[in-house]
Length: 144
Image (tube, rainbow, N blue to C red; front, side, top):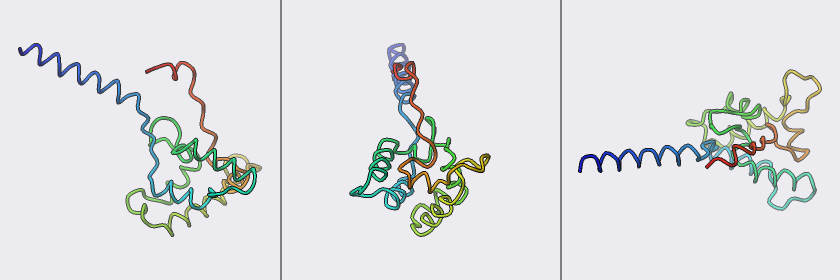
């Protein structure tokens, strides 16, 4: 009886580890994500750039500011916003979120290159501000 219980607990823990390990954890702070969409993504895109941005943001979701599988990993745009916003105290402060986005929009997307576009120029061109999300490698897609 005790062996059966121990086996059941071990199997449940192993299954939880496998399933939990395959779930992406990079979730954006919803109010920040909502305000990005409200500010930059048009409900009815009027031109190709607006359509491209809407599609890219919809596809990227949390990868507008994050990269990889951990919410701790931010792309260059997300890093700049994180310097200005606190996820706990600022998530309901719409004015502060918009001011931070305005400030970051004026920053170069690559501080090491003088000729790099600003984050705002990328957004205006219909591109994601941080970087295009990297496609998963084939072997990563095949893993359960």
